[in-house]
Each structure stands twice: as C-alpha cells, then as structure tokens.
Image (cartoon, rainbow, N blue to C red; front, side):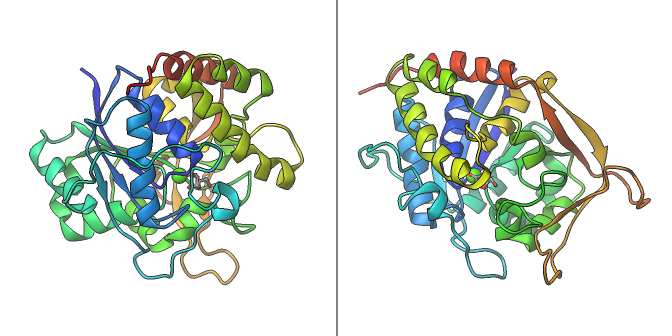
Amino acid sequence: MPHKIIIDTDPGQDDAVAILLALASPELQVLGITAVAGNVPLSLTARNARIVCELAGRADVPVFAGCDAPLSRGLVTAEHVHGKTGLDGVDLPDPTMTLQDMHGVDFIIDTLRREPAGTVTLVPIGPLTNIATAFRRAPDIIARVHRIVLMGGTYFEVGNVTPAAEFNIFVDPEAAAEVFAAGVDLVVMPLDATHRALTSRAWVDAMAATGPVGRAVASWTDFFERFDKAKYGHEGAPLHDPCAVAWLVAPELFSGRRINVEIETQGRWTTGMTVADWWGVSGRAPNALFLRDVEAPALFDLLTRRIGSLDRHG
Ligand code: RIB
Ligand code: CA
C-alpha cells in the first residue's frame, strides 16, 4: 500500500523537485499539497505548487493555501535565493488548475480525522506554520499522524540564514518548537544531510536529457545553484527538500541518530537553532531521527529515474 502523504511546502525550486519526486513515486499517494508562506509569500507558493502539479501532468492533486505568516513573527522570505517568483530559472505559464477553497490547515485537520489513524504522513518542506496551526486548532489529530518527515534544521553544518539557524525553522521557530514537542514520530532532514546532496553538472545534463520535466528541473537547479556557489564557493546546489521525500521512498539511502532536538525561540543570536543533542549529553528524551549522511550517487540516480519518467501533459 502506498504511503499516504500531505506535502506542506513553500515552492522554491527545491520544493518543486521534491513535489515532482513524490508525484513520480508509486510508493507515495499525495493526498494533497498545502502551501505556506516561506521562500516567497503565500500567493506565490500557492501558485507555484499548482505550476509544479501541472508540469507533472497532475492537475488532479488538490492544492490548498495555508498560513500567510508565522505564528507570532513577521514573515522572512528568500527571494535572493529563489528569485522574485520563487521558481525563477524557468518561464512557465500561470496555472489553470484552481486553488481549493478550503484553507490548507483545515485540509490537514479534515484529512487526519477522515483517514484511518496512523496512516497519513505529513511532509513539511517549508516553515512549520501550517502544521503547528493545525495541531493548535485540533489537538485530537496529533495522535492520528503516522509520522512527520520534514526538511529543516542544522547542527554540524551550522545555519544558512543566521550562523545558528536553518531557514525553515528560523522563519517560524515557535511553530517548530510546538511541532517538535508534539510527540509525533519525527524524521528531521537537516542541512547536515542535504549539504551532502550536491548536484553535479553531469546530473543536471542527464536530467535535462530526460525530457521537458527534466529540462525544467535542470534550469531550476542551475538558477538555485548560483546562490550556493557564490556563498560556499563550491560547484553544485544542495537539493534540500527532495531529500525529505527520498527518505520516504528509499530510507536506506540515509543514516542518522534518534536524538533529542529542541528549538531555540528566545536566543538573541540563536533563535531558530535546532539544538541537536547528537552526543546525548542533555539527558533529554530523544524525539527525532536526525539524519546526517546520504548516499548521494544513489539519491541522484533515483531522482533521474523517477522524474525522468514523468511525461509533460498538455
Ligand atoms: O534551508 C533550506 C530550506 O529553506 C528548503 O526547504 C528551501 O526550500 C527553503 O525553504
Ligand atoms: Ca522549501
């Protein structure tokens, strides 16, 4: 039976690749996609999610707009990384599929109440505002979640938006703190792992050769890479969000530890930090599988095969 998942996302080029991987993987049944404000404002993330679904020929996947701002802070966006549209790098037409009327948070609540308990996995690959809001509004759904597999956090790799914090956690640290404390089985895909999933020219060229969807992925990757190349000085872009979806499809490609992870929300310099107790010194109970290593060649082979199999419709 395929994993039933809800993808909560702020597309972003890497979110787009993650969504394509999910839609191309028979192991996963995407019940819906909920957009959240993050890389770019909500109006754009809700638009971009539909653009990606139509690119994959999956206008049947319901897309919902969720929260347009963090729980209790102003929104921080990342147009300097993802471009003004959030999907810069490829000119794609505005979506024709409509946005669902229901709020994304209500979709998460209704789906978890409708589906049998323990059968739905939440896959947040942006700030955790929608997830935390759903848990606040309907605490009864928390015990019904099978697992949360999220892209976010960092420890050995330090921060990418501040010296201490990774973007998804930093944008809404209060939401992250509530999700990490909720007691749901948590799989955390941090920069420690995703920075080992760097694209290569050979992979981008191979992806472009697979067809129109692969060409879009190649162009997005090229755009996305320019920022990391300028910042870190090395070739290749870290494909953050696809790693979270890839863990669901091929968990054996990743390794890490079950440890305690707390979220800093008060630090003058460290707000948004995932305080990962990798060496078990805190005595605090483990609450997350915190991943650190990835078999990158096998990951990129999976991406090429799966995304390469998508045909462009219409
Ligand atoms: O720090 C990386 C994360 O921030 C990714 O999810 C990327 O899409 C941005 O949202
Ligand atoms: Ca994202």
